[in-house]
Length: 347
Image 1 (cartoon, helix red, strand yellow):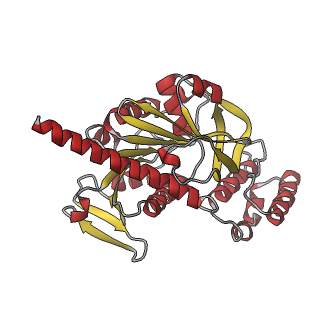
Image 2 (cartoon, one colour):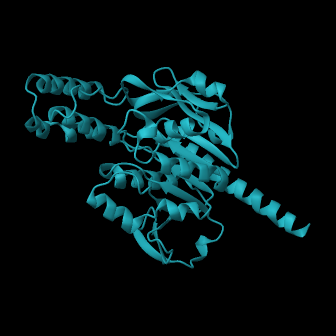
Image 3 (tube, one colour):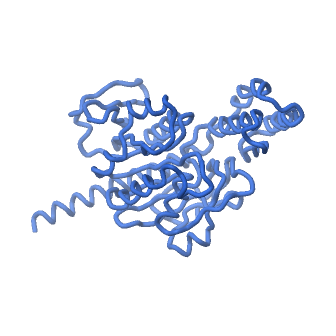
């Protein structure tokens, strides 16, 4: 089934992108809007990743929806720093948090953001973020937090602090499923998920405050975990199941560019478990050149096309299964709630 996307703030039109016939507009009274699963996406990613994140999550939801129809609502926190281009883009296609706080949704996805401050509570969007997740625990059936949004939510709800890693955790890491759970139905016992983050949360601190772990890695630590907060089941992904095959390559290339322009003093960590041996050797040679003759002009010779041709999205089947389980959870909880309200109205 298609995923329907709101493209204005008044619901006059929707945008549907079907998997086989491109895009077309549907009017606001289309029959498919009835009994669909309503999911909000709060896209906090920087402007450079705004559209790609939107696309990645759209494509993953479309692949995972199965026979269910998903209606995706796009939101942004106005306090997230943006360029003039980014402000114009979200103004045209996204709603603000004031609109979000005056509605309810079946599910919510909150993306991470690029860290700007040493402390999360010093980030420019911290107050808005707290409002959003407080709203979500009362007005959604389940909410997904990704990467930095994970660290913000566990700090806000349970006082669990993140801690900085000595090196960036970046790569595709093998995860082990730690328990049976509805979100892990038909997910293999061993799966691989991309990670890209500078911070982590202690497994012990999470356990002490009642979180349930679903997957974790020897190399990358806790990957996914859950906790019920009032009405909503919060699902936390420290990794990025939504990433496309070349996303980590793009991030690594971006970080190399920052090093070459002297915006960062440390050469970035190569993603682990991601490139084949030939690609890793190519990247080692490029690193030697960068350390010997550091300068922004070297960036143009980064062999991005050669590296990209052998990359494969090996984590997509597991990611699709996890998100399918999540959408089905939303649908079943919505149906159960509707039946309960119908019975209550008769009493």
